[in-house]
Image 1 (cartoon, one colour):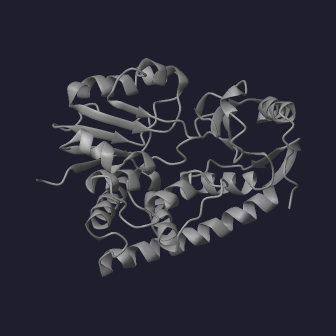
Image 2 (cartoon, rainbow, N blue to C red):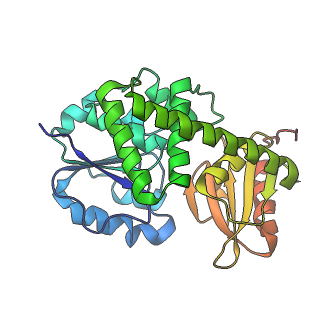
Length: 319
């Protein structure tokens, strides 16, 4: 039986218009935010039709998920329950699915491990794989990241940031196939690539801490905001938010949009908070939301502060 082909999705709005032929499994691909799912995600699902054998995701979208609640092809579990997607790709699920021709996965660590588990028919490619995915995708929730998992996660992020997109996607494919073949024992060439990319990512994390120290402050009760003057890449954005979340109940990042205006992204480690309930935030999931920011985003920051205060959840002290 041939190995399924791998198709990586870099953003929920950037789905292929003509999916590859054959039986398809989609893993860790969020529905496009707000009402965009109807023009972005639904056409993709409709194009696959009966060839879509499972759509497995943990990025809750209340409206879109409700539309597929009774469709047996969909395995949709809230992030507060499934802290990462790979734990949903089990041997039992793969036995139900049967043959797979193509795997469509989010282009990040969580998506990579999910895709590898489809290739391995639900088996973990290394002992800590599921826990590593939880640690990376849901930081601050008590999960422990292994040394190998950290190397792979950092390498994926660095490749996405430093390589042209085709090369980064090709690296992801080689990495997925290597992990599916022999778990954490990658061949020497691939292991050297992973270690080199991981070292570069560590340097970026150190730079993020400097930015947070210089540009961040508690702007509302329980809300620590980092304000930057330039749009950040995905890796730096995540690093900045994680560091901000360590200092308060909610961490937020204000950054300009090169096309005009600005964005405020908010994130929290606290599972008692559902940031979708905060007025003004357009998309994301319960622990990670974003919104267009006007006049410095002070109204959004204040809304976050009121939301935290209403739930009597104290913000962590600044450090």
